[in-house]
Length: 118
Image 1 (spheres, one colour):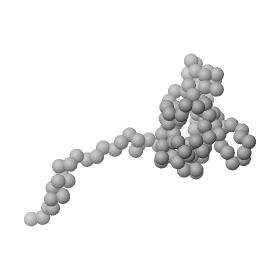
Image 2 (cartoon, helix red, strand yellow):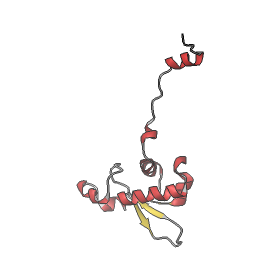
Image 3 (cartoon, one colour):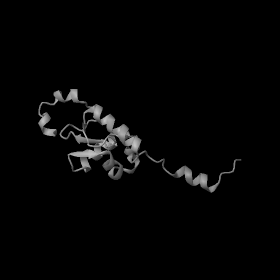
Image 4 (cartoon, one colour):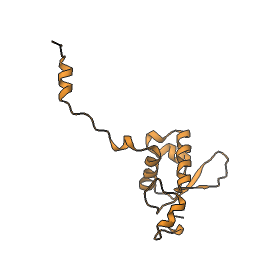
């Protein structure tokens, strides 16, 4: 007969933890939702993301990589800055919250014009 400890017996009745939705989302989606839902300004700098974004995104390399992903998808428009090491973007608001949507697909949504998010 195998001996079972009290901890093993208690663990058998415990329900398995369900993974949270945030664990399944990728970081680009988390940053995009934070920008749309929480950031009130029309532009954002890498420094703002490093200071104010969710804690998992507060790394310089991560910030720049995620911002580049959002530039490729059409959510951020790079702005020219007075310093070579400063990164700043304009947020393209008004697009549907679909992180895989890029600029070429905006034509599918005729009710949204470029003037709505510039």
